[in-house]
Image (cartoon, rainbow, N blue to C red; front, side, top):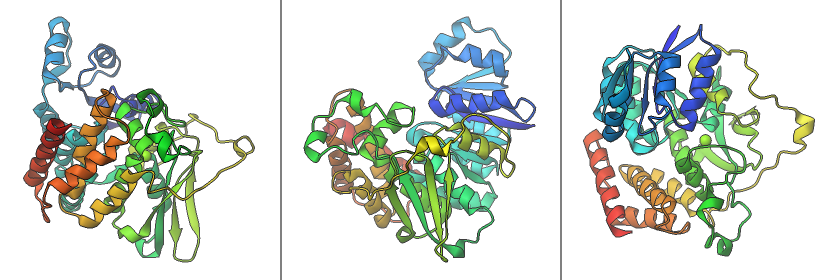
Length: 380
Ligand code: MG
């Protein structure tokens, strides 16, 4: 029986994780789970999974919940409680599905304790890839990607030698605006941007997919996870989201991982690896799919993707600044304060505003994250 600590239980990845756990009650149990403000579902989670501890990171929501709560599960409140749970409580696997930079510190606590990490929170690696991978190497913690592209690459690399890899090919759906002209992009609404063609996801990642910043963040994530130079990472647009990513080897052979889009597959794999568990979530029927198509990404139209390649070349704090500026810009777009095309402008502005810091430690990263948020929030 593997004990799971689930960060971000009420989000899209969190709920899919609960579905996987529900399917294999003899294999997995939830010993800790966290929500931010979603207390409406919390009592149901507690009743069904009987975790040892629950964190409500938003203190006001915690106060509200505790007024009527009478249960055995310990309830902790506040952001710091996330670190306390991942750093001190008993579990085997951390499923990190928080949104944004907030996932970094609690995940690092788990890495230091040599826990297996099922990593869905890509911003952890984007902001602090070097620190996170170094900590994992030191402790021996396994980081198994949950992001579908990285899970695909991870699966393709099982049994392979890194020296045999020619390149990693990350697929991108291209989002809802793949065929829009630059002019049409000027006037897209929030509703259109939230309408992803293939995946049902949280709002932050859905907007990131529409700007293609998501793919940019994933390039950075892949760079740290698989330890290959940037020149060996390529992005290809694949609108059907069936090929989740590929690895090309030095002999010209290419491996790919395919399935209909369902996050339960990579989640389950991260929990059960190296074992594969039988599941009937989706069935891929090729005659029904008819065609799989591939295109070059348009870096002029989707500037966010280009920016992500740039910051990885710059290194240091640049990816952290990009990540923080993007998080705030996306929030501002979600609350109707800036236009869609403003998002890459804002990220670019933040990147040129701050001087880079070449070998940042954890405190420096945290400080850059805070300063970038403050800067973008005040200016726009
Ligand atoms: Mg992905």
